[in-house]
Image (cartoon, rainbow, N blue to C red; front, top):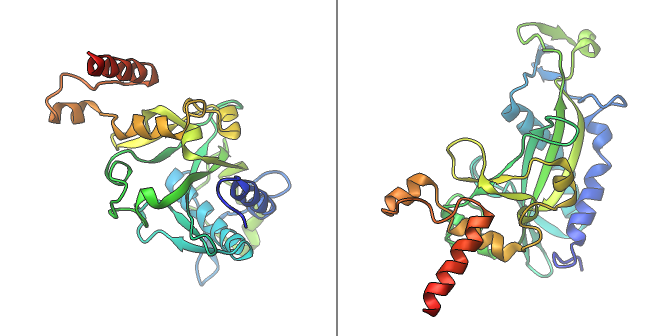
Length: 269
């Protein structure tokens, strides 16, 4: 039986998906998706919108992931809504263990760094582990939480989004991305100690390619328990103000350990 504990899930799924890189990109590394086609065989090009690219990449992978689930005796459940966590839930048909798989994509900034992922909320279901709001199953029911990261390089040349192409012109259409790479890690191993981009209350990831590939982010050496505790009690400035605190108790991992040590000392006194 393939259990999450032995991490054969990660090894097998990554190996399975890597077989299909040739379906996603050609021999030169260019993305095989050129645009959207209508019933009149007109092709409308895809822009460099990261949300569109992310969605199309995920759609391409769903049948492959479903095949993996069938071959390895998992029940596969997709998220009900776009903002639900995770993208895919696996349920082992023998042990009934649940494994969360969130699919994220980002682009390279250089050979050694990427823009980074947002790794899901650190409020709501993350803090209330029995909550069913915006999550397929309560967070606490999942044995492990994985992130399938899709990293790509943006093409330098801009696609003409105003031009409509025909099937005969297919090879002339520039691929908006190239050099697609899969990264599969437990969420805590690639998380950072800062929120993700924007004002949303999401956990951020490391932006270093080596740490993403190897799963050696800042929490990897401390373990999932420290990761959970850090983000369950992390506060933004707005959250601290609502609690009538002058400032958040900590803003990074160094301040977190100082805060925990101070709290421990106060308790002993």
